[in-house]
Image 1 (cartoon, each protein chain N blue to C red):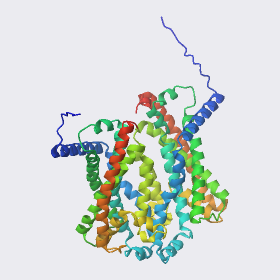
Image 2: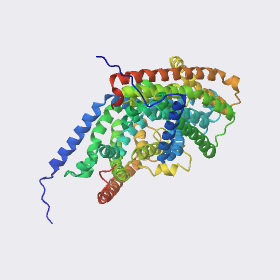
Image 3: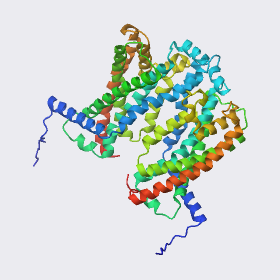
Image 4: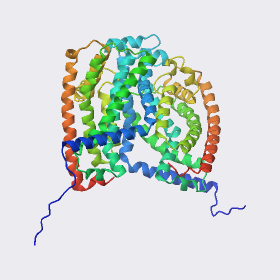
Amino acid sequence: MEITTLSQPSLLTQLRALFVIARKDWKVFWRYPLNAVSSVFQPIIWITPVYFMGKAFSTNGQATGFAAYSGSGDYMSYILLGTILTNFILTVFWGMGYALKEDMDAGVLESNWLTPVSRLLILVGRTLTSLLTTTITSTAMLIIGATLFGFKPTGNTFAALLTAIPMLVGLYGFGFAFAGIILLMREANTLVDVGSFLVQGFSGTNFPVKSLPYWLIPVSLMLPLTYGLDAVRGLLLETRTLFPINVEIIILIVFMFLMLWGGAQIFYRVERQVRILGTLGQH
Amino acid sequence: METTITPRSLGKPGILSDVLAFYAILRREWTIFTRYPSWIIALFIWPLIFPMLYILTARALSGPDGSGLAVFIQTTGATDYIGYIIVGTTVWMWQNIVLWDVGFSLRNEQMRGTLESNWLSPTWRFSYLLGHTGPQIVSMAMFIAITALEFGLMFGVRLNGSGWMLALMMLAAIPAIYGLGFAFASLVITVKEANAFVFLIRGLVMIFCGITFPVAILPEWMQSFAKWLPQTYLIHGMRAAAFSNAGVNELLPDLIPLISFGIFWLLVGYFTFLWMERRARRTGAIGQY
């Protein structure tokens, strides 16, 4: 059977759709300015207890115990950098699934699904504005955090930024798979909250993973984020890394391709299943 | 010609009818609470994973040879840093959950569209908030018991002090924690979107009350501010009750301000409710969302 459609999908129309999605999200984000302010201050509020706790473990401002694990006694630079990377990780990691849940609740998911735009592209589009706003809010957070707690990068900023790229791109793969699960389960909050806490804990956002109990270290080594955080810190703060930085970058690049391929496969299978079940419009 | 109509109501308000209404609200909240079993997962997972980030950071700060831990023991006087952190984070979670649960109870009714019709019934309106608090206290007691059980079994945290003194501290904290929740719930009816306010209040507790560190380590001005937050006394008193042999006399410096703050916040909560209730009826905002 031949199907005639008025739409003429091309690279240009796909890019235009991507731009339209990003522009819509940009408008929505700035319509709630209190949330923007909150996203700058929330991470600072969360790490403040760690700052004072660190003081209780330090002598003359030096956290010698922490330095024995990480190679640097400057635990606040270590944590601030971890927090900023986590902001980006959360945006990509969970952002797509959350965006689908929002569309489900608003009742627009099904109609969006009917447009002649690649569904993975719709998901990627939902992260573009978030990445931009996360860059803005994280920069503001870094300035405030550096003023309050101090931030002393001693290494190569450009190399650290380059290293973060394969980590973030690879995370898109995980985001695709997670978005598929949200389509199927139609509930995001508990999954996101619990999942993000566990991933943050095991990948060493706030501490070197070497300090984890020995039985938890294998869990940590299975997460590509562990290598990303470790390598970026190694390059920017010159901390002691788990493996040589070159090896960690190779692991990140391999993971990036594996996760992109695996994530897209999972998403397409689940999405097909959801369309067969006819539950796309339910929430 | 002028006609005077005396309004007649079928409702016969009295103490018994108020008690019955309170019981009905309590039963409704309990039914809703037990109808969504996902809270069971949250009840077991959150007490573990929230303190975990701070505990693992503290473990890293201790160092492989425990040199950092020796400094911590010297600074705080606490030998068990896990127990020390759990008390602080549990108090924070308690206040946080109350703000979301009790604080948003009237707002949720408003969103469901049932607040206005409930308001028309001849009952004591404050019982809507009180009725919501009952199941919340039960679930929080379970939450705290599970926290103690999980960390006792998995991390060997032991209660060296008195369970009775610990219970006394928590009982003394109920008016302050829930009074704040009542005031908050009343404001939310007018302010509507209140997430940012929850973040602000729980942020203050997180920064100033010493959930993972002794308040004495804070700069002078922050210590002065911390004295105005009841959670500071609760955390200090609970640590003393749980991990030392502190009796009522030793706990009095924490109990007295805690109870005083409790009376203050209950009154603030009640009068804010009355003010909001009158204002919302006058402006017609009660049914808006």
